[in-house]
Image (cartoon, rainbow, N blue to C red):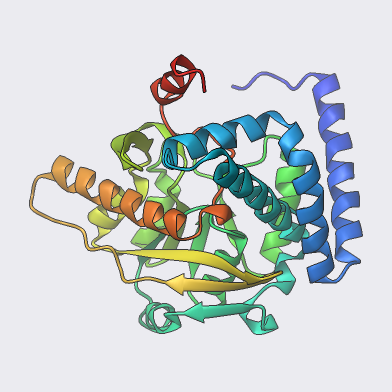
Amino acid sequence: MSAPTPPWRDLTWRIEALAFDAASAALRLLPVDWASGLGAALFRAIGPLTGSHRIAERNLRLAFPELDDAGRGALLRAQWESLGRTFFEFPLTDRITPASGRVEVVGGERLAAIAVERRATVFVSGHFSNWEVMAMAILGAGVDCQITYRAANNPYVDRRIRERRARYGVKLFAPKGGDGARELLTSLGRGESVALMNDQKFNEGLEAPFFGRPAHTASGPTRLALKFGAALQPLSVQRTRGARFRVIVHEPILLERTGDRAADLAAGVAKVNAFVEARVRERPAEWFWVHRRWPAAAYAELSEAGL
């Protein structure tokens, strides 16, 4: 049984939720492109003043050691603009759909086939550009899919997020107890698809190469695909102009099924990391750089080098 929430914490959460409501309401008064541009300008100004800027800077040193100071600085500014756009577009996601004309889908025939054949599929992606757009593309194609996400720390804000998404068909699910949650197994078992982000650090995950360094990676998507014989279908999102996007439905990741479960799982996780790395290298300004993706030892190396 969880401990009761202290009154001061509950009050703080409620105030935060009211602020969330006010900000969302204000942004919804704006045209989508205006809200997106406002987010880019604000984050470009404020982002470098935060502790997250240091995290992003160190991540860029690990991923792109060949970059000089000027190149790294330009990329840092660009990623803040991208992140600001994404955050300010969040309350307007229902206006950023394929039907709105703001989202082009490349490889959409693969989504259409999954929808028509009702094939249980494990969609896998990363925090590219506005990652919320990926869900809209999947659902817009008629695929019955559970969209996984990390629950907000504030339960009142989290409830608002889930309720708003549910209004336009997005079924959000926050896995608990590791990356093989029972609910995901149940969904795949009844023929539904699931979508998971697979680009952030997962301490209990498998080590797999990422930009030439070992990185703990959730094995859940690969594990689920192997268990159910489902396709492991990668997607990515690119920002084309302002609040307009391209969703790419890539070729499925082919998983090995040799009978050696551990080896097959490790090989699949490595392929997912390779897919994510390739997308980041293509459009580095559009990835979510403000989290500690690598183990502590990698950052300790930078500190020892005075970086």
